[in-house]
Length: 411
Ligand SMILES: *Cc1c(COP(=O)(O)O)cnc(C)c1O
Image (cartoon, rainbow, N blue to C red; front, side, top):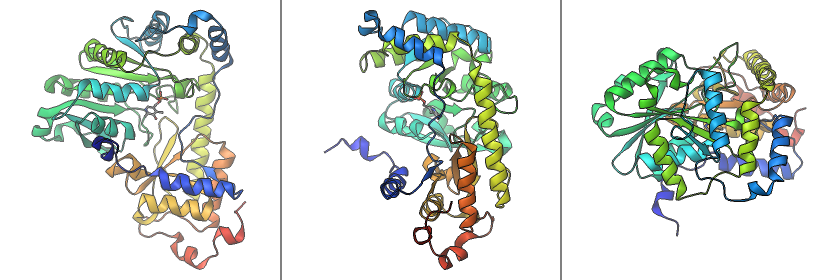
């Protein structure tokens, strides 16, 4: 019998979708998966070469230092300096992570417990919320508001909640909404954190993927921010290294120290060859980035134009690799995701998976070729699925029409 704390984790909304997908694939059906956010670009060649070379060196086969190799931590510090103009002490303000998700979850465990509140953006990356639950703390959602530049209205947070709040999570460019931050917004958050003694945890997983010339700021660029903030970064999205499992947390030395202490009791560091590949990634040429940004932006534009043809409003998307769209007629996000999978063999992520404010939305990942994304949209069109704010337009033609199971997949 698993521990009670596991029962608190909300049901995984993708479970049903993944089961259906597996059945369809087994039947040989061509499923287009726009749900998962796994980057489709491989790591640059020089990164792979560094991994191979270091992997072949017996020195890498030993236990690595718990909190990161000195060379990786110095490379992170150099990269923050050149990319953001932020200087970091590699010994006390930088830690290597087995991917940033691991670090985010362990930071909550290190900094919050029963009686504490963790403020989580709604919609937001689900791990923030589950990390709070696993730590025995209480996650409280703060809605992202268009009228606040897609930031939460922190002055609206209840005083009783504020008094118990230890951490505030934020992430820009945002998964799932594609919203981006300005330095002014970050400065406002840091001023609020200073007033209330709350640690801001900024997840910058998509910092290198700004569109239309947007260069994502680091929250640590705000003066005095390291007193009140830590920032998580990942090489998964920026350097195609999702499978390598390498990320870093930087900033507030007390929080980095607490995370290091906790982690030293949980894991024993990241494979040195992976950290050496990380050094190559951070120190080496970044010329894949403009190419990838252009590619994702091209897919975003193609997807936006395709959805616009079916009546969808043009949604903002300033970075990351997701489009965040309303469901037709206010249909529930789970019903919509299930409908497009059953009728069109297309997977989208139901917005409710990202919080209550995600209900009535769905997320489209831009990690497939533009042609596949457009084919998915064409399948919706064939099925008569269009956007209308008032009603679910596809409904009538749906019930009347034969399903694709009978007709064969729409090509
Ligand atoms: C992908 C992602 C991460 C996790 O990345 P890692 O592979 O664990 O480094 C963290 N935050 C957000 C918002 C993400 O989308």
